[in-house]
Image (tube, rainbow, N blue to C red; front, side):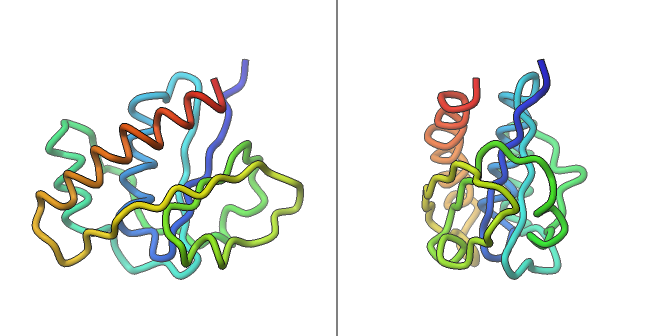
Length: 135
């Protein structure tokens, strides 16, 4: 059985989508491969997102902001937008792909506790939804 692929799309691809990518790959990686991208990617992953992942013992190695254009031709089984701007700017894919909008608070500029709260909400809601839809 091949792994299903979920694309987690955000505007900057520097925080929420990066944490979601790492969490899905950590929790469901045996059956699901997560990738993330942005409609206007930032230069770096947010330090708070990296710290929130490391706080759980989840590696942030290999995480970097990616432009949606770099992955649009990959085989994707589910697209999840995690911010309203990405939902509005979501590209047209070469084939019909189920999509879901699950917005999360943007903790940029806030203390680590905010990143941890968003991380935990992503793990509770998004990871569970990916498992429900793709497993």
